Length: 247
Length: 59
Image (cartoon, rainbow over the protein chains, first blue to last red):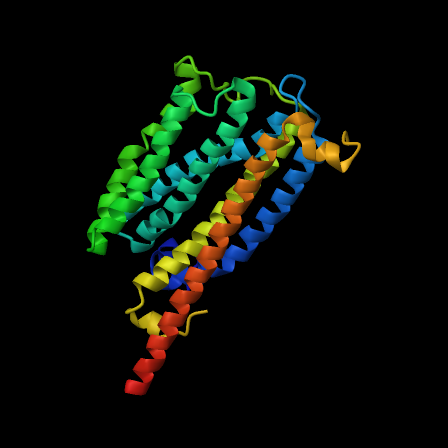
């Protein structure tokens, strides 16, 4: 039966989602690699040295995209968790589970590169500043979502419990984002603001934007790859997996 | 371009010890994530196809 309107619910079965994810991965991967190559070229060879921070500022080209992704992926994970709870759709829970490790990785990288930037600019690897502390809490939240899921044997209960935990924790994301405004932090303010004129040179801004896009597309590719693993592992007894030889 | 030599580029104005570990660890983590996922996917596929094959023999 063919209808004119696209039926979005057709993707709400793992069977339909598995090949779709497989088709999307190469596109996201290609765009990501092009962006990362262009971003590194611009960041190291085109963007000028900062007059205040010297060349240490170039850490911004990995630090800010990683930090953005750490927060963005948490919101997306919580969004999938909400859809999963609302519609009882298994692929939504699978997506939430697939996003968590990549989100945790970018949170770790934001903290790690932040430490390597903090040492030359502030003289300290770590300070218990509101921005750094709330970002560290985000890392624990990702770990909590993954550990809670792993610790419950009944997959349906594990899905629901970790989805609720992910949803409750989303309150920390605005706290991280606005921490530099609400509290007096050592961490500098937002690099980009919708209302204010950019504080950075155009080439620096462009390099950071392209790197962020590269990280975003990377996250999409890796998340879809992980969701394909999760689908195969969880649906291995389902007839569709048994009948079609999966590629 | 502002770099006159490779050494100058690697030194990053004296900040090389901070800049290169930041980029290096980020790159390693991302490559590592892709590699373990590809291995995990291949393992899941192999296990599945084996179970399908053995089920076929049993039938």
